[in-house]
Each structure stands twice: as C-alpha cells, then as structure tokens.
Image (cartoon, rainbow, N blue to C red; front, side, top):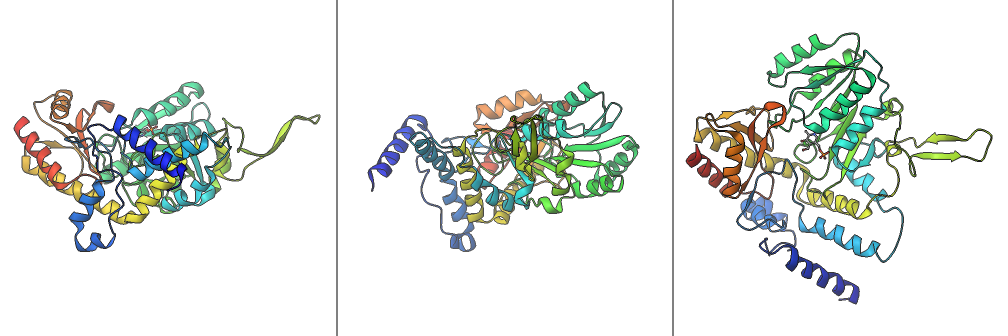
Length: 419
Ligand SMILES: Cc1ncc(COP(=O)(O)O)c(C=O)c1O
C-alpha cells in the first residue's frame, strides 16, 4: 500500500471511530456480487445494507428528507477533499454531466448542477418572462421549496397564483386544471411527487393539457430522481428540478435542474459568473456579454465543491451497479409491504393512493395528534417524518434499498400498540 493510500485509510478509520461510534461498524465492505441478486435476493439486500452507515438500533424510514449515502460515496467525497487540499485546482465537476444526465434521461446540454432542488426552482422562477396579471398554477400540497419562490415572484411582479387541489382523484384533478386555465395562464409549477403524500401525480397527462394550451410546465422533482425510473425525455415537462441528496443517495447539498433544449432561451440567466458565458468584455466602448453558453450549465457559476460532485458520480455508479430499475423495484417492493402492513393494522387514514406510490406512504391516526405520534415513533427509534405542510398533518414513511421487511414489520407492530 502506498504511503498516500495508507494515510487516507488511516485517516478514514480514525474519523470512523470518532464520528460513527454506535453506527454500523461493518460499513465500507465491498458491494455484494450481482449474481446473488438473482439467486438469493434477500441475502443480497442484507449484504448491501452494510454499505450504509446506519445507526445501530435505529430504523431509518425518512429517505424522503435525506437519503443516507453508501460508504463508497462518502469515501469519494472524503478522498477528493484530501486531494483538493493538497492540489489547489479549479473545476473537477465537469465529469458529473455525462453520468448524471444519462441517469435521468436528459441530454448533457439540458443539465445544470445546483446545490439543491430549491436553487433549481429559483432559477426558473426568476428567469421566466412573467408580467403583472399573468397567472401561474401551483398545488395545495407544496413544500416550502416550491411555494416560496413562486409566491415571491408573484409578490414582486404582481402575478396571480392559482391553486390546484392535489386531494382530487386523477380525473377530477385534470378537470379542475382545465377550469383553472385562462388566457392569462403562463405556467404550471407543481410537484411530480408531493412531499406530503408521496403520490405519483399524473404528470404526463398534465403535460398534455399544458402543451395544448401553450403553457410552460415546471415540475418540482425532489422525489422523482432515484425513487422512480426518471426519464426527462418522456415526462412531457419543460423544466425539472431535483437533487441527489434524497433518493439518489448522493452527497448532501447536490442538486440539478433540467431544461428542455428548446426552452433554454426562455429562462434568462439572473445569477451568472465563471462558466455561464462564451465571452465578455469591459475593454471596448460597449462593455458587454458576448453570448451565454448554449447549454443549461449557463446557470451555474463560480467555484463549486468538486468533492461533492465526485460523490454524485459515485452515487450514480452505485445505483447503476445494482441497476436503476432494480433499485426502483426494491424501493416499491418494500413500500408495497409497508402499505399492506398499514392496511392490516387497520383504522388508519391512509392518504397515499395504493395505485400511485413508490417509496412513500403517508397516513393519519384518527384521534391522535400527528406530532405526538411522530415523537412516539422517534422515541421507539423509528425515524419517520411528521408532515405539517399545507395542514396535511400526517406521518410519512419512506422506504429505500437499505431498509428491510423486518424493520417494516416491527414499525407496524409499534404502530399497532400505539393506536
Ligand atoms: C417536494 C419537495 N420540493 C422541494 C424540496 C426542497 O428540497 P431542497 O432542500 O433540496 O431544496 C423538498 C425537500 O424535502 C421537497 O420534498
């Protein structure tokens, strides 16, 4: 082993001991062999779970907030940080575009790296040409990240905000949408999968209505990448903001924005700098920007943390090594199991439609306060999410590949006792 590698390994182990006391000590072992996935799937997933630094005795069921990264991602970030601090260099994130765009079914030119979903939403919210009296449509199940940017733009430019009812069935929702649209409607800006219920919305059908009415269509895709077999080319939307720090299990503080190529010039770059342009001058009679980059990377500017993007590449590698559709199928399999366990517990108000969910199920416990229930589950070491957004007031449970049938069963038992 070279001295540098030994240094990295020792540093890595030392920090393991300091930071991860009480965490899964087996984390960091190699990926299990793919052949096991066919032969002995449960053994495969059990082995794979060891890749994650999960806290011993805790049941992490809140991937919808933040996805834990497998050790190879954490290590890629850590190694890059060590390298960067000895080799001061610009750049290093360019290699993210190819694997990340391929993973989400976009072209490289359609992808802009961001720090989170909200940053992507703000780029669109401030870049579009919207004027006083224009109407935009959002939903009544928004996360603050897709509420504030639009409310803020509406505040500044006196736009009218209309609200689509995400409690309606697909057919009724599409009918309501048609009624909300007027000649002044310029944009639909709604979640692909709301943070509240995790329902997979009929986004393609909404896209058809948008197209027919010549309305721009933005999707808040915080939960789309990693949880679903996301394919931007087939989604029927113009803009899609997402992140890798949830369902893609990437480093925290890494996101991306997708913009259809033919819509690029509809989004005026507002925050710009190094990497946005193709040239600029202050040395002529007419100081000016010559041209923007002819790709979505024009909205990305200045020095970023390349280590985080090394981690993004590693997360994409990790998901691809297992297989994108296999990951999606496992998430769904565990969530289907959870769904049937909740039905078995009985007496719950399950908010997520059975025919339109992937990694999230949300429910209320009649007669119980959701915050109180949340505290109870945490006390029992089940890390779930309380959902106060838009007064939906429920408990949200997420499942990902590192979860197991057993921990879902014990969550159901705990719930049964509590109810
Ligand atoms: C639906 C939805 N939109 C937006 C966001 C904001 O994401 P970020 O914190 O990456 O900006 C979240 C975060 O949970 C979310 O669930």
